[in-house]
Image (cartoon, rainbow, N blue to C red; front, side, top):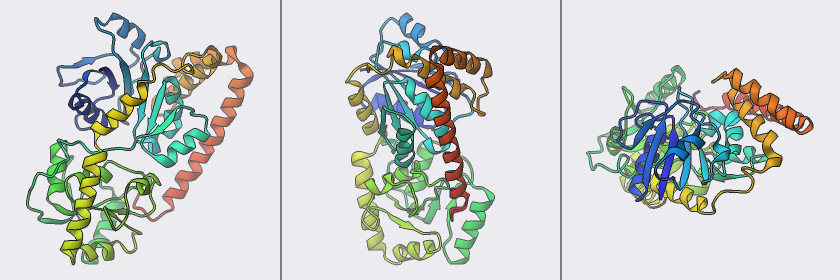
Length: 372
């Protein structure tokens, strides 16, 4: 299959992992991005490239257009997605951060995939009728076990704010030293760090099923994450069998139990590694996307009765505070209201309801135990 991959690319982000996974799965790929890219199979395009014209000018038509959002600082919103005559798919990464606009952008595609089960279910309630679950994954090349000496008892790779530093100091006071990255790590650097860890400690400040959830076990480390997390975690992992969880207050005790029992630690870590390597790599995620898209172009995407909705969804994306593309937003708002003022108005009321719902949920999360 020939896949046209659109993403706001950056080395070591989800779009980068997807690019490599497509090739390893035996497909051909052309990456289009508004960023400067280092790959031969890459084309730099405008942030609002006319995707219909681009595909029409290609000497060979792609079999699928896959758009992966990577929560980068560079926005990337190809136009005329709904006019493509090939299947289209959107993979919403970091749904917990981007719920407000991802649920709108997803409506422009045939198929939409979400990394967080709980947020996906809210998206469905908000009217997303093409949603499927597709969590993060591990890269089989970068996040593998590099067979290094496991000289780190407990490791953590990720951003470090004041609250996390304070929390790790509290852990150290309880006898558990958490070794953290001293700079941003890319690709195999992450796998090599985890390959030195006996245990990888996971914090999900937004209770999300994050990349560490899969990267750490793939490298052979025991994953210990928080018990209050996206419910998708418990669909995949069985605490005490192939990973484990903590409640923050008892984190030091949970970790100490495994450090004091190397055989138990090794057994659970190996079970977690087997689980991830056999079923939760980016390559397996690509296979699921491709399988779904074999159903072809959906009738819903270009349905004339949904014209107002497509324009309204695009407008709500453009006006988001992270982008503020107000000219395009107002143009699409006008088109939506002119096409169907009553339904557009009702949809805006529904949008406001879920905006309030999102704010209350995030407020509740900030009041939780997770270092924010």
